[in-house]
Length: 240
Ligand code: SF4
Ligand code: SF4
Ligand code: FES
Image 1 (tube, protein in one colour):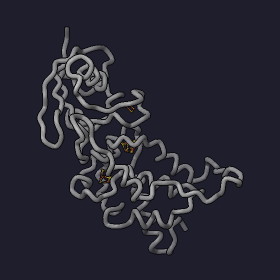
Image 2: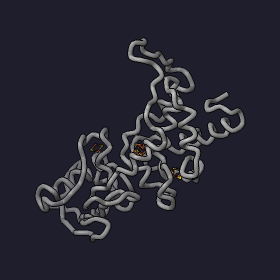
Image 3: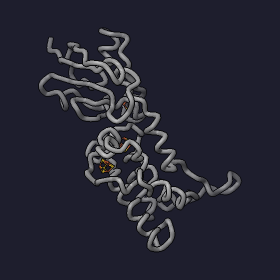
Image 4: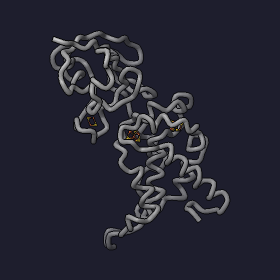
């Protein structure tokens, strides 16, 4: 039987790679490989997943040096030579084995004011947003984020400057800046324009290159940079 040679990170910040030999199968995903190890070779292996269909964002890991969602990454695509080296996502503390601690990642969404701020009460009618408006199109382009952390792990600036809000939180902020129903756009722009905000992005596009949903946080961050400039020039948070 054909096998894969798999090295898996074991431990926390301190640890080592452990080797396994896993049967190779047709249409096998990297998550299938990890699951095989956990079910049949070492039940103590810690990893995280939920949906297995690319929706929940919980299965991301470092695969042969690159951050990827693992439930939709086929072994054939990333391990042509039959070798896999798997670790937790970069730029986050390691809980154990393949599980990264995403608390700071999501706390940054809060710091970037990544929550919708409603302006209507529940007794008012639904707001109607025309899908053809430029704002709605901007929001659509960034809204499909699943919070997987791949972009954050790919971003060098997060590595150099742990305070940097990072591509996912800024992408979320840009989505909300384009939501005409939202009431916190001026405050959000303040939140994302400080030292740890959008102006720290070097536009190297690693986030965009690796985002499994083919989003472009780089583009969203450029939008925030533009909007902060407009705000400085015209004294308002939204486009003149
Ligand atoms: S474009 Fe900006 S946010 Fe994206 S990886 Fe590069 S520095 Fe990070
Ligand atoms: S922007 Fe893309 S890579 Fe980043 S968290 Fe969202 S889905 Fe994942
Ligand atoms: S398990 Fe949900 S995105 Fe991979």
